[in-house]
Image (cartoon, rainbow, N blue to C red; front, side):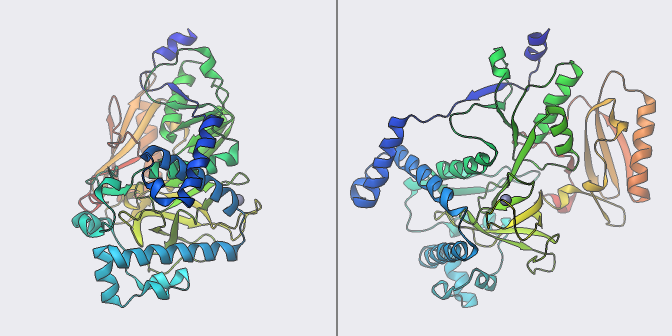
Length: 453
Ligand SMILES: [Zn+2]
């Protein structure tokens, strides 16, 4: 019964990843790093892969130290990196050459990160409409790596990064996971849509997946009466962690959830702390501003604003003051862990996609709706779909026990929360829509103004 039930799960499985690097490989990489500093021309002829590994170790060792630098040292590091990136933009990137001329901005005079506010912010549409203008002219095509961002409802955005930069990203991700005990020699399971073949796969310390997949997995286990595997930590990235979800997942699996905020454009990365659920912004990754709706920076704990990021490591296609479209709430000024990194209390996906729009153009935040209420006991999954303001379709995947009473209870509960400004219709479906990257969203917005978000 145990394995039969698991074999039946089509979407889920544990793929093991040991990712261990042998000692031999490590010493080889250290040698490569040494060669890089001493004999540049020789380094340039080293195979790409080896250089990328070097970037990985360099980044790890920087982060190991810099996470405990004091505020002064961090600020100095940040402004130096920022100045260097902007000097590169002024020398090599057509979009910024034009912009800096227009507004009279001289990166050599940058003394404080706040000086950046003299530049206009950059939105996704501007990048999409002229991507060539953002490419550094001094970096050959052979060193570029093309990729596209997921996008949710709108078109994907094509971007270029430095070849091998994925290893740098990996160093950042592993550094934040280390806060909850991860290291490269420990096993990590991922939910991927194949089949668990051995019971030994049940004893893996880390489960790395999307919040929605962790919930699906939990529901399937619960319905089949199978106790959850004993994980130490659930590493949940790539999707928003909605209110109530964290608590529910932690109590079902009986372990901590560790999440982080990142986005494909790679200007902002913030990961939870080991001593709280606040997110530390990595200043080595990008320079991050939190801009309120009036355009001014959020300065006090609890203030919310849009995350605006400037890359500190993508010289191929640098994004400066890039509006992510995501928002965050500023956290406390200090953290008991001792890191001086700035803190966010929470991060959320696209503004509009977290909201249901009412008849009066009023916005009803997803946080106002209790997603774990008992009215959903006979529902496997649900999702809102909105195509016109003031009206929303609630899509339900029912359990066999579902009856007309459940429909009435759900409609009553939502009327109470949303009032008369939104008409709600129930629709029974066999499965819910995911984004093209397989991510789940509670609200699918198909409103005209939301399309390009
Ligand atoms: Zn901390």
